[in-house]
Image 1 (tube, rainbow, N blue to C red):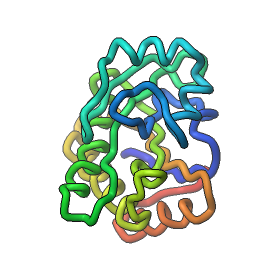
Image 2: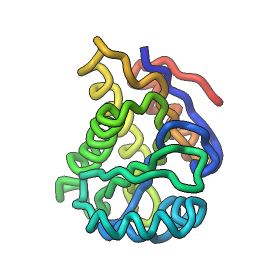
Image 3: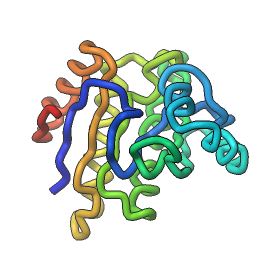
Length: 179
């Protein structure tokens, strides 16, 4: 059974198999989580990401972690919040689904997610965390026979985001703990 953990802190410091980067379409760095990950991983990450030739919204691509404690970075591009009528929910769910698919393809057992699209992209936090938890739960349930993914960390940089993760997990019925 996959363990869900809420972690308050810096995703760049987590010693897991993979961290997920809330990237932009270029994959060449930006602000928020994206900028922090690029800075912490070192210039090799930028050079590697240039070879990936960008990423579509809702998709994900994998790179080495370079100087990060995590072995891999899964870069996913979340939607910019407009009004909720531009397929934002479907695109956000796709980010989490595709990240789990890449994790399975690369034998990743421990993965950490930020709240994708909740920074400068403006997705409402309560809705975003509920979509994330629902999608992760369903993605894990689809492949119960292997139970490959042992732990999913939901990372909060602030107390308010920690509360949103906690609420989403509680409402979904998923058992979780704090790290």
